[in-house]
Length: 266
Image 1 (cartoon, rainbow, N blue to C red):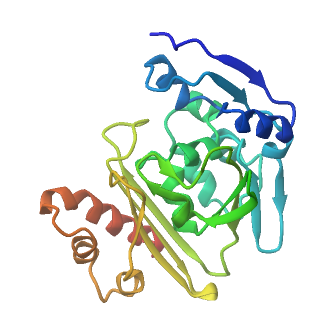
Image 2 (image 1 turned 90 degrees about the vertical axis):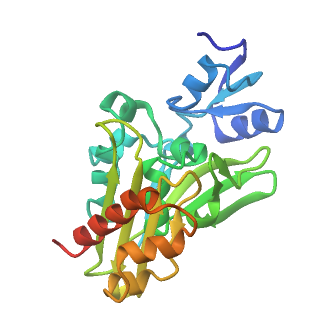
Image 3 (image 1 turned 180 degrees about the vertical axis):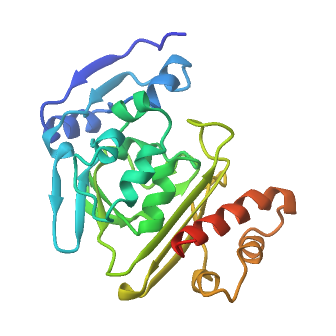
């Protein structure tokens, strides 16, 4: 199929893109999610503004506390180490497991997060790492924790005229440990279940997150109990997702077990 007719604008600067968005245009970057939606006519924007090469969205800034990655940085650039990885390799590993290389060459970090597919890698990884979303829009620039940025399946806090311009990833403390596991039917597919575990004693952060739930990622309230072994992953998942059958919970419980084992170096 072919998309419905639309006007195309190549933004030269962030100000151009913001003006176009204020006039009702929709942003386009890697086009790995929007493209199929256009072809299937699930999305029919009258005007698209291409933000993939905006210098402001391609910028990378490293500080003492973390790295701010422009939203138009591609998965492949993270995988190949072309941008700083404040986690010491966790981002590179996650990027390498996204879809296929052709998709990673074009797909962008910000595009994936703004699309907010519940089964996407960056959605759960950035929530697990405690990243911040940097948003620019009519109300000015603001920062929102990733756990609050994604509000539901394919839903975020982005309003009319808002643009996700960067993601700030904090540097973990000395001795921090990380685990990320996802189940896919075959390589390249979206996850059927996923989980992340962050153990950061220096920063006193213990975080377990479940993904691919058909909704936004779920940060377990009892993460520390799971990490310390006082609560089993299976019991934690059952408590966090009441009403679901044991069969429906099995993959998520196993994903959490394997992410925890990774974090523990097993």
